[in-house]
Amino acid sequence: MSKILILPGDGIGTEIVDQAVKVINSLNSNHEMGMTLVNGLIGGIAYDETGSPLPDETIKTAKSCDSILLGAVGGPKWEALERDLRPERGLLGIRSELDLFSNLRPAILYPQLASASSLKTEIVSGLDLMIVRELVGGIYFGKPRGIEIRDGERFGINSATYYESEIARIGHSAFQIAQKRGKRICSVDKANVLEVCELWREVMEEVSVSYPDVALSHMYVDNAAMQLVRDPKQFDVMVTSNLFGDVLSDCAAMLTGSIGMLPSASLDKNNFGMYEPIHGSAPDIAGQDIANPLATILSVSMMLRYSLNLEELADKINSAVSVVLDKGYRTKDIAAAGDKIVGTEEMGDLIVEALES
Image (tube, rainbow, N blue to C red; front, side):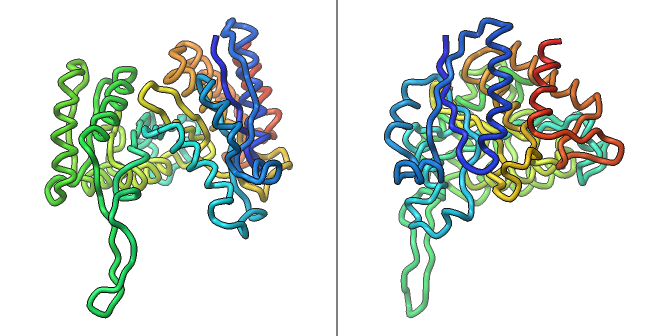
């Protein structure tokens, strides 16, 4: 029996999460998962109803659940608010409150969508890469930081800092993920010029001793960026720091040619996770039944695999998505000439139909 917190959020969040809930309900009915769903507020809608983008009740409920499914947050409606009241602060706040330090960004290219990539089909066809990014440390959080006056001019400071314990825990997270995949990890750093990266590499080597079934390699970040474009299929799992992961994961996402297809996860040390599509709230298309729900549905697959240890059911979702794409069904954002364009609701129904067939 597992309990899942559903946070639709803003914009298209409600529409796409509704389709993911259809998938969960189908699996509940046909595979006796015993999954209980509870609803909560986050983002702009939470501010409108409670005066906070992250109500205390949401955090309290989240801590009593086994996992979280999030839609999207934000929109121009709330841009004039003070920074601490904006929807995005709710997202940052829940990550911090729950210590979700391990960010998983898969880059999976469905063969049916290979022509959507900006790279040659033979380079990206069959791509299945996972980038594991440390999410709550590094240069984005290190101190000292700021802008001050030195020698009569402005001087900017940021500090790339990691405790060895912070590096070790993201290492363990990545190795455990690799054990469920191809059992290969590439740790990305800049150890030739940065001492913090020397420590990163040393700790990764120490962590690897606990995972003799996983092969560890190292690569400098500049080379890794080049290799992602040159030969992305050489990688299985990449693990890296907050800054490098931010850049490399966006690069990898675009290898697939479709941001609307990509899920993500943010995990704590016990693999409790928050799962969400990597795209935004798209308020310009909200309520029009044209949003692509597949990234959110695939986020459910990630939840089953990484937090709930239901890998067979995760595979069923992935297979259902492939079946629907094989039949030529597409939402508008991924459609090409000759495809059958369907709306958000119909795409959700098609996935459920494929699951149950």
